[in-house]
Structure formats: structure tokens, C-alpha cells
Length: 213
Ligand code: XMP
Image (cartoon, rainbow, N blue to C red; front, top):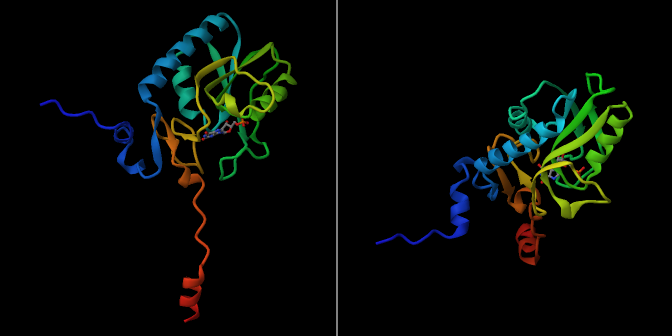
């Protein structure tokens, strides 16, 4: 007799490593889809930059896995540098931008491709492109793995986008929450109770009576 299909929620949970199951609601983008899409992005970038002096500027630290996979798909000479920017503290809302690592390489005259993990409000990439433009590159374009378009404040579009995603807080494949989950090989959705724990119930009359006793 054929087995009945498991419900969707169960299927999603099965693809999550057991150790992460309590924190993740599901897998949004599986590893194979990431690799397929990144191969296509690499082809598009290689076509656009053939024969140019390319400097890839990667924003730390969320790009760590995406960058490693994307670079392997770029079959031409290029340089890589890193810019440290942080916009989140330990929560999920965009805070003030802090540059905590500066570029080492000369940007002047280079064709700069800025690589970031996710485009959200647009604040980070807007500030980064303004900062790099002041260094007189020959051109500047942006490449992001994920785009949460609904969250944009003002207008900003990336030149290369891996996946447009809904307004969910995602982790994995380099993306973190409080510096955790970066090592997951897929993009997953964090359970809201992990980043917005329910406040402890206020003591009611019963518990007040109990503690007074
Ligand atoms: P803005 O708002 O400046 O945000 O476009 C870009 C930066 O915010 C972080 N970010 C996230 N990080 N899961 C994360 O782990 C998310 O869902 C998320 N949304 C935004 C990220 O560092 C990105 O570079």
C-alpha cells in the first residue's frame, strides 16, 4: 500500500539538522537551489566583466559562504577586498551603521563589484556605494544573494540578485542571528520566539498571594 505524503511542516522540519530543529521554522532555500542560482549569477557577472580590472568588495561577515561559492564561478583574474560593516546589534532591526574594517586595496580606476548577503532597507549598500564612489572607481555595481524588497526605505536596487524573499528573518549560509547559524548550508527561517521571546507573564493575584505567603 502506498504511504500517505507527510504534511508540509513535517517535510520542512526533516531537512533541518537535528541540532538546529528547536530554533528553525523551516528551510527557505535549499543548498542545491543556492548552488544552481549562484552558477547562473557567476555566468552573468563573467559576461559583463570580461577583460576588465575587477575588484570584488565583500561585506563582512554575512557574505562568507556566498562569496566563496560565487568566486569559484568567476573564471577571470580579479582582486578581492573586504569591508567591515555592521548594522545590527543582537536584535533583528537595522541600527546605526558602523564601519569596523576598511579596504586595503586601491579602488581608483577599478571596476568594483560590491557583494553583500542581503538587501533589506538598502541603508547598508547605499552607504557603502557612496563611500566607494568617493575613491573614484571606474564603475561600481552591487550583487546580493537575497533581496527583501518589501522592506526597502527609499529606492535602491542591486545589479545582481540571487533570490527575492518575503519579509522573514533568515539565517544560514553566512547569515546570522547573534553570530549564530552562519554555518548552515541552506537559508532557513528562524522561529520568531527565538529573536522576539515572549515577555514573562506579569505576576497575577494568585502568584502575589503565593509569594506573600
Ligand atoms: P539594510 O537594511 O542596510 O540591511 O539593507 C542589510 C544588512 O542587514 C542584515 N540583515 C539580515 N541578517 N537575516 C540576517 O541574518 C536577515 O533576515 C537580515 N535582514 C537584514 C544583513 O547583515 C545585511 O547585510
